[in-house]
Length: 324
Image 1 (cartoon, rainbow, N blue to C red):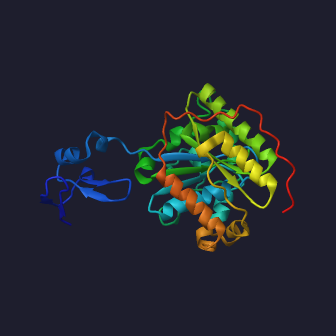
Image 2 (cartoon, one colour; image 1 turned 45 degrees about the vertical axis):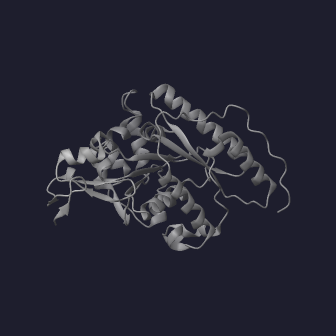
Image 3 (cartoon, rainbow, N blue to C red; image 1 turned 90 degrees about the vertical axis):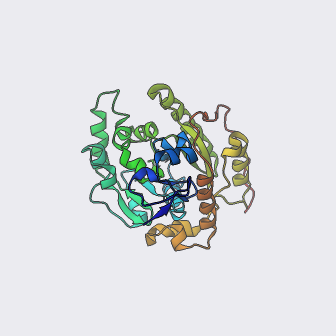
């Protein structure tokens, strides 16, 4: 198909990859030559594309990590970005939530070196998933047998393929509720972390543990990871406890504390129907809240030089909750 060069206005038929450029807002530009592409877009246009990498992490269970990973990934994919969602939990809840079971799982990517783009299963338009299952327990043992300087970087080696960055705009990793070698691998690969936090006192302790873990990764593995957001979940504004926990998080994390995900039964029901919240209950509070998070992901960019905020002061104990 003939196109018009966006730089010089000359008509031509694209024959090379460099002749088509896609801007962050999804618009396509066409260039008849390298000189025209450079003249319009500058040297930045020749930098290698790199997928944004986000881990959903909290060492405390029951904070909504999988719900957040699935619905953030699906929400960004619905907005036209290509997303890869990776499950690092042996329970395999991501696959269960979306009704998919891949022939090859994360185990095969890590241990057997299978190309991650071949292991990924298309589950929705623009959304692929690398599933996990009980075989991850064997992968954990395999990782422990690797050389100390390599065992925490296997995921980075396997996923740092040009095919991943060429195919996907965003990689989301759903981490398990523990600090194991799989999560260390995830933190060594990603650039940023979103921490889902339930609105109770123990959740504040969990956030402090995550911050400490990230500092340990930076110190021992020499890889910088930033906390891009803290996401309050299961929020019920009718209770004093929830309001005080939210105020505490906002006080510590400032603009990095996102608006909360309200307590919504539709979010709990959606996985049993093998649907995202947008498919199961698009008019619900849960869909509205996760749509807001997906919009935030698209509106922000990872900054490698932006240090993770500290959470050094003891988490204040909230007052007794008022009657709902």
